[in-house]
Length: 294
Length: 294
Image (cartoon, rainbow over all chains, first blue to last red):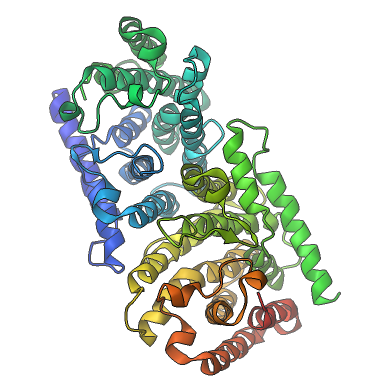
């Protein structure tokens, strides 16, 4: 199967499971379920859930029910986008080419919608009955730590806000991004691997892969913000420079940033060595993360 | 031990555990840990954690480590206060007699601080090692559902916002409050009971107690908003009428509201019958909820 067909099939699997897990628009109070669905089904690439599925398959054949765990990552990712886009934070009007949640539903509802998706992420994991309670609690811990303040997503977001206008600094840059985007991408593959019963050696290899693609993802994200148009990105381009964010192009320039992303891609491949051909799709996903244009 | 001394001892136990569970102010990024601590240690009465502890003790003697589970309730409760107080929601400047989180740390940080406390609630539960994984995942589910959109806290908050200015209606009123405050109070005692190994009959009795004190709590809260001064409450009094909220005094008047609170208190006592003297403190806590003046 071509990578394109493979991705389409995975995305379909995820969409169906998201559909099943989110309360219907008719469930009261309807507004918040409408708002949750608006942001969830706004055309995301589902990269975190797909990484979770594929990491699980690298460890064991077709682990049943893994798509449920994978969806929790999309809930948490979508919550973070909704809150990041709020006027008090990045103040963005567009996301994935559509009006942001607060532009459509108002600020109060957008705050509550983010809260609801974060909560649903944990509820989804705790409700799973396709995996034992020991693995389940380890998976919940992974998600909570990756979303949290110490080395996790919220911590990265705070450091990023506080970094605005500061002198670009390589060490600060890497620590922000390891936390802000890296932690959840790393958790995506770790959660899949734990679900599928990875042993310590396997989990350590998968973690290393997750760290390298996490860094590659953010380097490329920073570059796209400089190189691409708002139309191509589906969100406001050039925002980082405007907000004086510490970014890879700001610290290293575009040419060196591209070279760094390529190095991370190769390191991600190397981390997968022990899995041989089983990890073919994970390698392709690393390539895709570096070669994407939006 | 007098109720006052008992409460002081419980609160001290909870404060100590909260202190242990929240990252120190020195942990980077420091701002968010400072903001989390500012709101957490603003002098809350810790009623939810105390209910959790006491429900557990009603089922089994001194269940070890229960204070950790109890603290997750305070994290989730505090997150909900921080987000409720935001300008886009209730726009309150004072809480527990101190400036609200966004007045001190700004809106962006207050949004992230709420997010962080919600996340820490789940992380705290998933990290517990004093209880088996089966009970742990049941407890996580309790918290997630009580905090969520379907019959939970966020659902109640949305219904409450949407109810502003509507004709007061008894059925809508009860459904809002069962979700908005009732669900988390009910979860407080259920989580304690599950932690301590309650059987189905015990859990059902504890749930019934939780529902009655939940309703009593909200009736009294609505009455205090009318009867008390801003100074006594530590938050802006008279806010409900100003925002045209659907409240118990608005629907039933103060005299009938007081009678209803008393009925709920007695029903809460009745629900505890099977526990005999073991449930003495839970009975006192029900009395306290109805008799409090702030």
